[in-house]
Image (tube, rainbow, N blue to C red; front, side, top):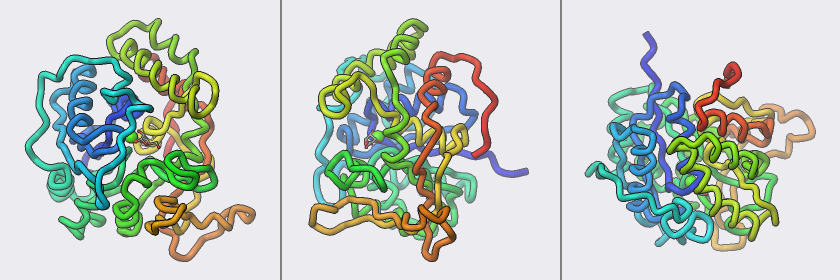
Length: 326
Ligand code: RIB
Ligand code: CA
Protein backbone atom coordinates (compact mmCIF):
# COMPACT_ATOMS: atom_id res chain seq x y z
CA UNK A 1 0.00 0.00 0.00
CA UNK A 2 1.32 3.48 -0.88
CA UNK A 3 2.37 5.45 2.23
CA UNK A 4 -0.08 8.14 3.35
CA UNK A 5 0.91 11.62 2.15
CA UNK A 6 1.90 14.07 4.84
CA UNK A 7 2.36 17.79 4.36
CA UNK A 8 4.63 20.09 6.33
CA UNK A 9 3.68 23.74 6.03
CA UNK A 10 6.57 26.17 6.47
CA UNK A 11 5.20 29.67 6.98
CA UNK A 12 5.53 33.18 8.42
CA UNK A 13 1.98 33.53 9.73
CA UNK A 14 0.73 36.26 8.43
CA UNK A 15 -2.83 36.98 7.19
CA UNK A 16 -2.64 34.92 4.00
CA UNK A 17 -0.65 32.17 5.77
CA UNK A 18 -3.53 31.92 8.27
CA UNK A 19 -6.00 31.68 5.37
CA UNK A 20 -3.87 28.93 3.81
CA UNK A 21 -3.75 26.92 7.05
CA UNK A 22 -7.49 27.23 7.59
CA UNK A 23 -8.11 26.26 3.96
CA UNK A 24 -6.01 23.10 4.36
CA UNK A 25 -7.63 22.23 7.67
CA UNK A 26 -11.09 22.82 6.26
CA UNK A 27 -11.22 19.56 4.36
CA UNK A 28 -8.35 19.14 1.90
CA UNK A 29 -8.04 15.53 3.02
CA UNK A 30 -4.31 15.98 3.47
CA UNK A 31 -2.59 15.18 6.76
CA UNK A 32 -0.62 18.14 8.12
CA UNK A 33 2.33 16.56 9.93
CA UNK A 34 3.70 19.80 11.35
CA UNK A 35 3.86 23.53 10.83
CA UNK A 36 7.26 25.20 10.94
CA UNK A 37 7.79 28.94 11.10
CA UNK A 38 10.28 31.42 9.73
CA UNK A 39 10.72 35.17 10.05
CA UNK A 40 9.05 37.07 7.24
CA UNK A 41 5.71 38.77 7.72
CA UNK A 42 6.48 38.64 11.42
CA UNK A 43 9.32 37.16 13.48
CA UNK A 44 9.53 33.37 13.70
CA UNK A 45 8.33 33.21 17.35
CA UNK A 46 5.32 35.41 16.71
CA UNK A 47 4.59 33.39 13.57
CA UNK A 48 4.59 30.22 15.72
CA UNK A 49 2.26 31.77 18.29
CA UNK A 50 -0.02 32.98 15.51
CA UNK A 51 0.00 29.50 14.01
CA UNK A 52 -0.97 28.01 17.38
CA UNK A 53 -3.81 30.55 17.63
CA UNK A 54 -5.06 29.56 14.18
CA UNK A 55 -4.79 25.84 14.97
CA UNK A 56 -6.73 26.42 18.16
CA UNK A 57 -9.47 28.11 16.18
CA UNK A 58 -9.59 25.06 13.90
CA UNK A 59 -9.44 22.70 16.93
CA UNK A 60 -6.22 21.16 15.67
CA UNK A 61 -3.84 21.74 18.55
CA UNK A 62 -2.60 18.19 17.96
CA UNK A 63 -0.44 19.48 15.07
CA UNK A 64 3.11 20.30 16.25
CA UNK A 65 4.40 23.80 15.57
CA UNK A 66 8.12 24.39 15.50
CA UNK A 67 10.03 27.68 15.44
CA UNK A 68 12.67 28.05 12.75
CA UNK A 69 15.06 30.68 11.51
CA UNK A 70 14.85 34.01 13.28
CA UNK A 71 17.03 35.76 10.74
CA UNK A 72 17.93 34.96 7.17
CA UNK A 73 21.40 34.13 5.89
CA UNK A 74 22.33 37.77 5.41
CA UNK A 75 20.83 39.22 8.58
CA UNK A 76 17.49 40.34 9.86
CA UNK A 77 14.36 40.04 7.79
CA UNK A 78 12.40 43.31 7.43
CA UNK A 79 9.01 42.39 8.92
CA UNK A 80 5.71 43.51 7.40
CA UNK A 81 3.36 45.03 10.03
CA UNK A 82 2.15 47.51 7.38
CA UNK A 83 0.70 44.55 5.46
CA UNK A 84 -0.32 42.09 8.19
CA UNK A 85 -0.87 44.35 11.23
CA UNK A 86 1.31 44.71 14.31
CA UNK A 87 0.31 41.24 15.58
CA UNK A 88 0.71 39.67 12.13
CA UNK A 89 -2.97 38.71 12.14
CA UNK A 90 -4.64 41.96 11.14
CA UNK A 91 -4.58 43.49 14.64
CA UNK A 92 -7.29 41.06 15.70
CA UNK A 93 -5.56 40.52 19.06
CA UNK A 94 -6.55 36.89 19.45
CA UNK A 95 -5.84 35.63 22.98
CA UNK A 96 -2.49 33.94 23.64
CA UNK A 97 -2.57 30.29 22.58
CA UNK A 98 -3.09 27.66 25.27
CA UNK A 99 -0.44 25.42 23.69
CA UNK A 100 3.29 26.04 23.13
CA UNK A 101 5.65 25.49 20.20
CA UNK A 102 7.65 22.27 20.14
CA UNK A 103 11.24 22.58 21.42
CA UNK A 104 12.56 20.94 18.24
CA UNK A 105 13.99 23.46 15.75
CA UNK A 106 12.12 23.65 12.45
CA UNK A 107 14.87 22.37 10.13
CA UNK A 108 15.54 19.37 12.39
CA UNK A 109 11.85 18.55 12.49
CA UNK A 110 11.62 18.67 8.69
CA UNK A 111 14.59 16.29 8.40
CA UNK A 112 13.23 13.93 11.06
CA UNK A 113 9.79 13.64 9.43
CA UNK A 114 11.37 13.18 5.98
CA UNK A 115 13.56 10.33 7.26
CA UNK A 116 10.60 8.75 9.00
CA UNK A 117 8.37 8.83 5.87
CA UNK A 118 10.76 8.53 2.91
CA UNK A 119 9.00 9.49 -0.30
CA UNK A 120 5.74 10.34 1.44
CA UNK A 121 6.41 13.86 2.65
CA UNK A 122 5.38 16.98 0.79
CA UNK A 123 6.56 20.46 1.73
CA UNK A 124 4.57 23.64 1.29
CA UNK A 125 6.72 26.74 1.83
CA UNK A 126 4.81 30.01 2.09
CA UNK A 127 7.47 32.17 3.72
CA UNK A 128 11.18 32.82 3.12
CA UNK A 129 13.07 29.60 2.34
CA UNK A 130 15.58 29.74 5.21
CA UNK A 131 14.26 26.63 7.01
CA UNK A 132 14.21 24.52 3.86
CA UNK A 133 17.75 25.54 2.94
CA UNK A 134 18.93 24.76 6.49
CA UNK A 135 17.23 21.36 6.33
CA UNK A 136 19.04 20.66 3.04
CA UNK A 137 22.37 21.41 4.71
CA UNK A 138 21.51 19.12 7.63
CA UNK A 139 20.44 16.28 5.34
CA UNK A 140 21.92 16.40 1.82
CA UNK A 141 19.71 13.41 0.85
CA UNK A 142 16.55 15.39 1.64
CA UNK A 143 15.64 15.72 -2.07
CA UNK A 144 15.40 11.91 -2.32
CA UNK A 145 13.28 11.70 0.83
CA UNK A 146 10.73 14.38 -0.07
CA UNK A 147 8.03 13.77 -2.66
CA UNK A 148 7.36 17.34 -3.73
CA UNK A 149 7.99 20.95 -2.73
CA UNK A 150 5.47 23.71 -3.47
CA UNK A 151 6.64 27.26 -2.90
CA UNK A 152 4.71 30.52 -2.87
CA UNK A 153 7.28 32.93 -4.15
CA UNK A 154 8.86 34.76 -7.02
CA UNK A 155 7.74 36.97 -9.85
CA UNK A 156 8.49 35.84 -13.38
CA UNK A 157 6.56 37.96 -15.90
CA UNK A 158 5.02 40.11 -13.16
CA UNK A 159 6.64 42.95 -11.18
CA UNK A 160 7.94 42.15 -7.72
CA UNK A 161 6.27 43.28 -4.52
CA UNK A 162 9.34 43.74 -2.30
CA UNK A 163 11.34 45.51 -5.01
CA UNK A 164 10.54 46.18 -8.67
CA UNK A 165 12.02 42.78 -9.52
CA UNK A 166 11.67 40.61 -6.41
CA UNK A 167 8.83 38.99 -4.51
CA UNK A 168 8.99 39.16 -0.69
CA UNK A 169 9.51 35.49 0.23
CA UNK A 170 12.44 35.15 -2.16
CA UNK A 171 13.78 38.64 -1.49
CA UNK A 172 13.88 37.97 2.27
CA UNK A 173 16.45 35.20 1.74
CA UNK A 174 17.74 34.94 -1.84
CA UNK A 175 20.68 32.70 -0.91
CA UNK A 176 18.37 30.20 0.76
CA UNK A 177 15.97 30.34 -2.18
CA UNK A 178 18.81 29.58 -4.58
CA UNK A 179 19.82 26.51 -2.55
CA UNK A 180 16.24 25.25 -2.51
CA UNK A 181 15.63 25.77 -6.23
CA UNK A 182 18.94 24.14 -7.13
CA UNK A 183 18.50 21.11 -4.84
CA UNK A 184 17.29 18.77 -7.57
CA UNK A 185 13.91 17.89 -6.07
CA UNK A 186 10.55 18.36 -7.78
CA UNK A 187 9.53 21.98 -7.16
CA UNK A 188 6.37 23.85 -8.08
CA UNK A 189 6.75 27.61 -7.78
CA UNK A 190 3.58 29.68 -7.38
CA UNK A 191 4.69 33.26 -8.12
CA UNK A 192 2.91 36.59 -8.16
CA UNK A 193 2.03 35.93 -11.82
CA UNK A 194 -0.61 33.49 -10.55
CA UNK A 195 -1.44 34.81 -7.09
CA UNK A 196 -2.07 38.42 -8.14
CA UNK A 197 -4.86 37.19 -10.40
CA UNK A 198 -6.75 35.38 -7.62
CA UNK A 199 -8.46 38.18 -5.71
CA UNK A 200 -10.60 38.19 -2.60
CA UNK A 201 -13.24 40.93 -2.65
CA UNK A 202 -15.57 42.58 -0.15
CA UNK A 203 -18.27 40.20 -1.38
CA UNK A 204 -16.18 37.27 -0.19
CA UNK A 205 -15.60 39.05 3.10
CA UNK A 206 -19.37 39.57 3.55
CA UNK A 207 -20.03 35.86 2.93
CA UNK A 208 -17.51 34.97 5.64
CA UNK A 209 -19.03 37.41 8.11
CA UNK A 210 -22.57 36.20 7.38
CA UNK A 211 -21.62 32.56 7.95
CA UNK A 212 -20.88 33.60 11.55
CA UNK A 213 -18.64 30.71 12.72
CA UNK A 214 -15.55 31.48 14.83
CA UNK A 215 -13.34 30.70 11.82
CA UNK A 216 -15.28 32.75 9.30
CA UNK A 217 -15.66 35.71 11.68
CA UNK A 218 -11.89 35.61 12.24
CA UNK A 219 -11.07 35.38 8.53
CA UNK A 220 -13.55 38.12 7.72
CA UNK A 221 -11.98 40.41 10.31
CA UNK A 222 -8.33 39.79 9.28
CA UNK A 223 -9.31 40.82 5.77
CA UNK A 224 -10.00 44.37 6.99
CA UNK A 225 -6.28 44.97 7.52
CA UNK A 226 -5.36 43.16 4.30
CA UNK A 227 -7.83 45.20 2.25
CA UNK A 228 -6.56 48.42 3.90
CA UNK A 229 -3.05 47.62 2.70
CA UNK A 230 -4.09 46.60 -0.81
CA UNK A 231 -6.35 49.62 -1.20
CA UNK A 232 -3.69 52.04 0.06
CA UNK A 233 -0.58 50.58 -1.61
CA UNK A 234 -1.55 48.31 -4.49
CA UNK A 235 -4.95 48.46 -6.22
CA UNK A 236 -6.71 51.57 -4.94
CA UNK A 237 -9.63 49.22 -4.25
CA UNK A 238 -10.62 46.85 -1.45
CA UNK A 239 -9.48 43.50 -2.81
CA UNK A 240 -6.50 41.33 -1.96
CA UNK A 241 -4.35 38.59 -3.47
CA UNK A 242 -4.64 34.97 -2.36
CA UNK A 243 -0.89 34.25 -2.33
CA UNK A 244 -0.49 31.49 0.23
CA UNK A 245 -3.96 29.88 -0.01
CA UNK A 246 -3.49 29.45 -3.78
CA UNK A 247 -0.13 27.74 -3.27
CA UNK A 248 -1.78 25.48 -0.65
CA UNK A 249 -4.58 24.55 -3.03
CA UNK A 250 -2.09 23.75 -5.79
CA UNK A 251 0.06 21.71 -3.37
CA UNK A 252 -2.84 19.42 -2.49
CA UNK A 253 -4.21 19.18 -6.04
CA UNK A 254 -7.38 21.23 -5.52
CA UNK A 255 -6.41 23.74 -8.21
CA UNK A 256 -4.95 22.70 -11.55
CA UNK A 257 -2.89 25.50 -13.10
CA UNK A 258 -3.86 26.67 -16.58
CA UNK A 259 -0.24 27.36 -17.58
CA UNK A 260 2.69 25.88 -15.67
CA UNK A 261 5.76 25.14 -17.79
CA UNK A 262 8.78 23.35 -16.34
CA UNK A 263 11.65 25.74 -16.97
CA UNK A 264 15.17 26.55 -15.79
CA UNK A 265 14.77 28.85 -12.80
CA UNK A 266 17.30 30.50 -10.50
CA UNK A 267 17.53 33.40 -8.07
CA UNK A 268 19.56 36.59 -8.38
CA UNK A 269 21.79 36.71 -5.28
CA UNK A 270 23.80 39.75 -6.38
CA UNK A 271 23.80 43.16 -4.72
CA UNK A 272 22.17 45.06 -7.57
CA UNK A 273 18.56 46.03 -8.23
CA UNK A 274 17.72 42.46 -9.26
CA UNK A 275 18.60 40.94 -5.86
CA UNK A 276 16.01 38.32 -4.95
CA UNK A 277 14.49 38.19 -8.44
CA UNK A 278 13.47 34.78 -9.76
CA UNK A 279 14.94 34.39 -13.22
CA UNK A 280 12.96 31.75 -15.10
CA UNK A 281 13.65 30.92 -18.73
CA UNK A 282 10.27 31.60 -20.30
CA UNK A 283 11.69 32.45 -23.71
CA UNK A 284 9.79 29.48 -25.10
CA UNK A 285 6.45 31.12 -24.35
CA UNK A 286 5.69 31.80 -28.03
CA UNK A 287 6.32 28.15 -28.95
CA UNK A 288 4.26 26.43 -26.25
CA UNK A 289 7.25 26.04 -23.94
CA UNK A 290 9.17 23.22 -25.64
CA UNK A 291 11.25 20.91 -23.43
CA UNK A 292 14.25 22.74 -22.07
CA UNK A 293 17.68 21.69 -20.90
CA UNK A 294 18.29 22.39 -17.22
CA UNK A 295 14.57 22.80 -16.53
CA UNK A 296 14.25 22.42 -12.75
CA UNK A 297 11.06 24.14 -11.63
CA UNK A 298 7.39 23.96 -12.59
CA UNK A 299 6.39 27.61 -12.64
CA UNK A 300 2.69 28.41 -12.32
CA UNK A 301 2.08 31.34 -14.62
CA UNK A 302 -1.72 31.25 -14.85
CA UNK A 303 -4.66 29.81 -12.97
CA UNK A 304 -8.36 30.10 -13.68
CA UNK A 305 -8.87 33.06 -11.33
CA UNK A 306 -11.83 31.43 -9.59
CA UNK A 307 -9.97 30.15 -6.53
CA UNK A 308 -11.26 32.77 -4.01
CA UNK A 309 -14.77 31.27 -4.37
CA UNK A 310 -13.41 27.84 -3.51
CA UNK A 311 -11.45 29.28 -0.59
CA UNK A 312 -14.53 30.95 0.87
CA UNK A 313 -16.67 27.83 0.24
CA UNK A 314 -14.11 25.79 2.12
CA UNK A 315 -13.90 28.24 5.02
CA UNK A 316 -17.68 28.38 5.22
CA UNK A 317 -17.89 24.60 5.11
CA UNK A 318 -20.04 24.67 1.96
CA UNK A 319 -20.21 21.60 -0.31
CA UNK A 320 -17.66 21.93 -3.09
CA UNK A 321 -17.69 20.94 -6.75
CA UNK A 322 -15.83 17.73 -7.64
CA UNK A 323 -12.06 18.14 -7.21
CA UNK A 324 -9.86 18.41 -10.23
CA UNK A 325 -6.65 16.43 -10.57
CA UNK A 326 -3.29 18.22 -10.25
O1 RIB B 1 4.75 37.95 -1.44
C1 RIB B 1 3.71 37.30 -0.78
C2 RIB B 1 4.25 36.36 0.27
O2 RIB B 1 5.00 37.11 1.25
C3 RIB B 1 3.19 35.64 1.05
O3 RIB B 1 3.67 34.39 1.43
C4 RIB B 1 3.01 36.53 2.25
O4 RIB B 1 2.43 35.85 3.34
C5 RIB B 1 4.43 36.93 2.53
O5 RIB B 1 5.08 35.90 3.22
CA1 CA C 1 3.55 33.85 3.86
